[in-house]
Image 1 (cartoon, helix red, strand yellow):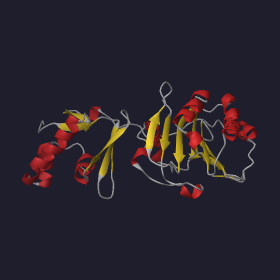
Image 2 (cartoon, helix red, strand yellow):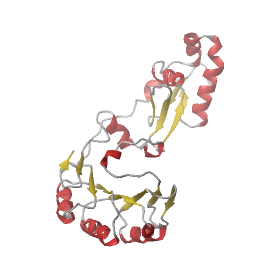
Image 3 (spheres, helix red, strand yellow):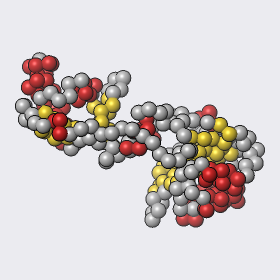
Image 4 (tube, helix red, strand yellow):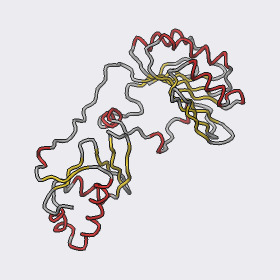
Length: 259
């Protein structure tokens, strides 16, 4: 540690305050680390102060913990020491994208009668690049192919599936489906006997089995660390928009269009 220099976070490393603890998001490596709120305070409220100046703020008894904080930042390559902090401006956090709709959800149950070809044409017209199909009741291979076939000539770049568990949707059956429809990026199998994760070799599609039962769209909104997207696009969007709802459109099981 250099007591008279200032520690500069890399522009892609941004601290975010939490109620009891904070996180340091690394948008380049698409990862994050939990940090104490005390370190968040040093990196934000006292940004640009040298360790010597921080000791004056917090007292000489704080020297050990301040040293530990900066050692943690150095060891994890979150920044560097400099005597010209003004030479390193912060990252620009404005967000926009060309599509009118960024992603869509189509819900399906035993009573749905969706015209998938028509839905895909309309999503294409909106420039939609990502689609999630959520199946709440048992779905046959023919029914699933009927939903996926119109995506083959669409503008979609990624497709996610939410399926109820059935013995025919074992790992081998789903891997065959992934090779046939290589825009599939993730398949989430709910109501499964046990939790497991498989990554399809060659194309990277993830297949996740989970015992949680999902019977309707009321299950939307669950939070888990594996869902956190520490990307530049996701982070910048969240600065001024609800990232769960922004530019999203949904078609419910009865065919109603919803935001």
